[in-house]
Image (cartoon, rainbow, N blue to C red; front, top):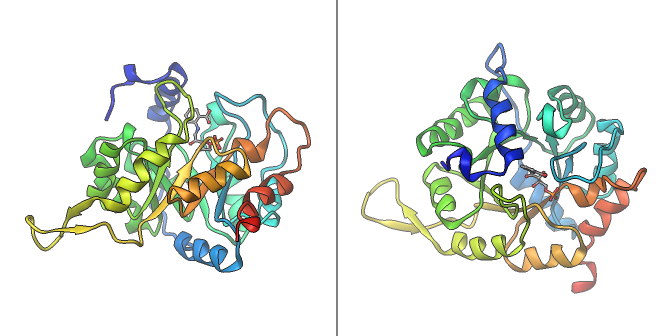
Length: 279
Ligand SMILES: O=C(O)c1ccccc1NCC(=O)[C@H](O)[C@H](O)COP(=O)(O)O
């Protein structure tokens, strides 16, 4: 885990708020919708698997969208989204756990809880199909505990990395769904080369076989690899897919914060259909 001094001030502020946020009153028990199955269905339909993000605002957004989160999520699904990511962080992203619950009731695709989770009790704030765990903010031991605690509750943990070293930590923690974030949390800049640098390594690298501390085996192909952040055009989609992305997580380009009433369905569709002319 990096120290807070390596982080952008906005991220330090996000973490400070996250440390104060309470957990849930009861341990949740989720019957999760499978993300890998949803990705496979999208591929079979000829759709690029896009996880569309309901992100009312953010430290780097041009503005705030006050639209009803459920209407936004439904519009994204109409545009072909494979899954929905919902920011539940309230103070920097305008999100809420209530929005996530309403969205999960309204759509039939998997729903990711996008938040900055630091301890086990925070997993219980709301039921979702997937939970985000960010390697940079967690000690390796805590990451392993939260991956296990997520699965005990029925969640699919999506473990986020930004470098090859973090990828190794994620795999050691048992991650099977890995997001490579193109956004550098030290400077808040996005660079699609991040995914291009980490993804081939993810496909190539080895990890210790559970049955032997000596033997190594290849990372199984069933690791789902997601390119996160900075994808804004069909060309970006094709670039990330060529680099090995099973799915893409896209917020800003779909929410289009600066343009009031921008059509979220169309914004999703043009990314989902990015490979249509490529065959
Ligand atoms: O989006 C931000 O401004 C941001 C700032 C500080 C920490 C995290 C931030 N974003 C979280 C995310 O991971 C993105 O919402 C997600 O990957 C989608 O990214 P994008 O498509 O670039 O909106």
